Image (cartoon, rainbow, N blue to C red):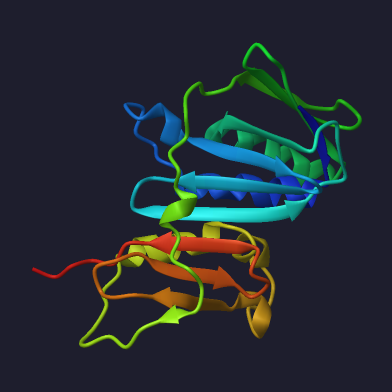
Length: 201
C-alpha cells in the first residue's frame, strides 16, 4: 500500500494518536489504524475510554482499500516534520510489516515495523448520529478527556487563531443515557469522538 497525502492531511490524521493508549501492555491500542477506502483515508484510535475517527482526502493511492496499524508516536513525529516543510507526504506499507513516511523531497523519513494484530472493531461502538434522548439528571465527563479534544484535528489546527464561529465548534450528535458512550462531531462531520461519561458513585 502506498498513499500520498498533503502535509495538512497527514498532520490531521496523525492527531488521532492523542487519544491512543500509552499502555505498552496493550500494543495494538498504541497504534493509529490507518484505513484507505477510495480517495479517503481514515485514522482510528482509542484508549478504551475515548475513541476518535478522522477522515481526510488523499492525493493518490496504489490501491482502493488497505489498512495498517502505525505506532502513534512515530506518526506524530512525521506529522510535525510535515507541518514544518509543508510538502506532500508518502506513506508506504510493505508486505513484511514495515512502513515508511517521507516528504516528497526526501528531507525527512520515518519508518519501522507496523504493529501486528487485529485492531478491535471499535467502529461498531460509535452511537448512531441523531439519537438524542432526554436525560433524567446530569451527565458527568472527565474534564481532561474533554480537554484532549483540542489535541485532535480540526481543533488542533486552531491554535493561535481566533476560536470563534463554526471552526471551533463541536456538537453532541448522540446521547442514549448517562452510562453509555456519547458521540461528538466536528463542524464538518469528518472527526467523530466518542467518550464514556463518568458514573458518580
